[in-house]
Amino acid sequence: MKLKCSSAATPRTSHLHHSPITLLLFHLCRSELRCEDFWHDWKEQLLVAASASLSKSPADKDAEDQPERITKTCQQLECVCYGLGPFASCVSARYQLAMLLLLLEAGQIPLKDCSVYDPVFSSGERDVLRDLGLTVLSENEEGKRLVEKPTFFYLMHCGKALYNNLLWKNWSARGLPLMIIIGNSFTGMRERTIEKEFKRDYSYISKAVDFSVERKLACPSHLIDVFNDTAVITFPSNSLNGLPQSTWAESPEPQYQHSPDLEIILKETRS
Image (cartoon, rainbow, N blue to C red; front, side, top):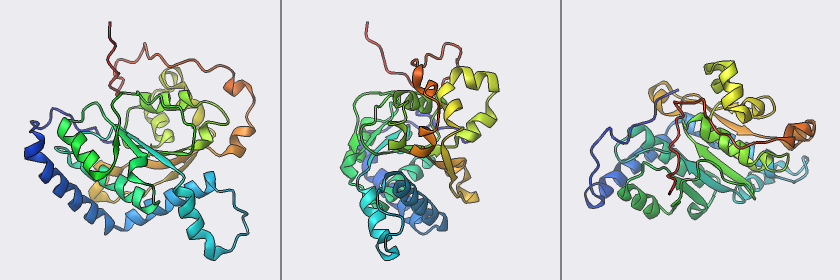
């Protein structure tokens, strides 16, 4: 898994100086990705996941109607993007932003229905995101967003605590199926973490890895630092409904007392 770009990696400049350049570089990244073969796999995987999770159409529906039905299904989605990183100075973050915009376009999800947040965003980067049509959140939710309608989460190389918080907030047989996540593989997280620590500190990921469905996403070698270890993750209702009720009985809020390297920026607490 790649390291996130540091907000201190490059000196920050004012919005007036870097915004036009940032937009130009972003559009170049988007044009490049649009020509990549792997982009078509990402698009298909998102559309299939959305259709499988949300569509209530009969399975024997006319195949010619299927693309239109899938697109209409995607249009029902809201989108939330956390932890994108300082895309004005970080090439990886810029490619990831470009991919997000391509996915929104493919699903015909309105840009205003996509909320983005990263505490490292500069004021100029927030302006760029607004200029692109996205909704910039003002509060650090720490991933603790309660989902009330079908939502696509774009969480590229975010810390495990953020995923864990998101699962905790929606830990029910009703809440989890409303989510589609494009982010780091839960299986990969488990393989890279000491088992005892994984179960203790990231208990919701530890449990979810056994009943979630992961579809690994293609990643070309020249973009391995940008898109490696990425999957589409869904939570099929039929799998969750078969779990014992004790699965949902106790769901304490994660605390992370034993996690010095949390890989998440917590919101500031006011005294």
